[in-house]
Each structure stands twice: as structure tokens, then as C-alpha cells.
Length: 163
Image 1 (tube, rainbow, N blue to C red):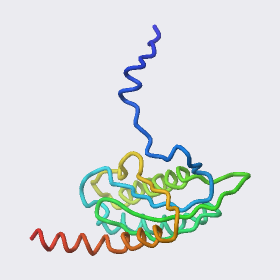
Image 2: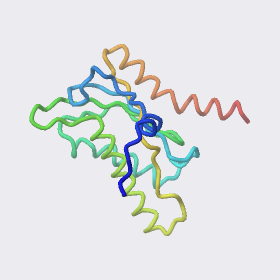
Image 3: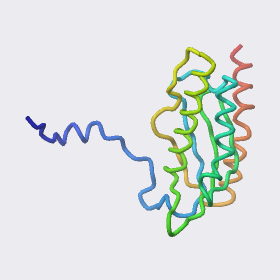
């Protein structure tokens, strides 16, 4: 017995894309990315996981020629970063390839870490998807860089205020 296609079900459960319809994510471009933790808890404060997140970030250009790293910050339950992709006509690196590889590599490294250390903690670290913003000009780039730099300070002020 085969199931019939249910267009109402497909429409209801289809995630709406946040991508710009007129932008080719394989072109050269600069992007501001936010990736959140699966759990709404400060899991990225675990020292071993922070190390994995940072080392994987630093190694990304080895995996993706034409990728330039810019600002990067690890917050308790999310990360922000800016990357620049240089288009390659033969085999373009897309934003989705980079973010997907980052999430996959960090997850595998984290799984190995928790197994080796005998830790009892969740293996799934990333929320599905990610948020991105195409950066179009130098002023916008500088504003986002400053936002990333200020993010930890803002969190500290908020935590002190909440005490």
C-alpha cells in the first residue's frame, strides 16, 4: 500500500527558508552566521567543547580553499561568526557546505571526546539550521564585527544585573 502525497501536510510542515531569493550562496560574499545549541543551556561553557568549537573554526580554511575567517565568538548557548567566501567557478563552496561541515566536524569530535572521557552528556549539540545574514558593505561589516566583540560583555552586564 503506497501513501498518497498530502499537499496540506507538506505545506504545514515545510520550513520557510530565511535565505535571500535573489542571492546565490555559491558566489563570493561575506556572511554573518549564528548557530544555536540544541539545548537552551550553557553547554558551550564546557571547556572540552569550547576547545573543539575553536579548533574546528580555525581549521575550516584548510578544508575550504577561498574561505576567509573573520570575527568569531562562543557564547554559552550559541556562536557568532563572520566568513568570506571567494567564488570558485569550477567547484563553488557554498555557505551551507561550510556551516554543515562545521556542525558535523564539531559533533563528531564532541562524540569522541565524551566517549574518551566517559562523560554522561548529550551528544547532539546543534539546533537544526542556522541564521545567516549577507553583509553587503564595509559599514555593515564593521557594525557586525563590533556586535560580535561586544556580545560577551553585554552578557556579563546582564548576568551581573540579574544577580
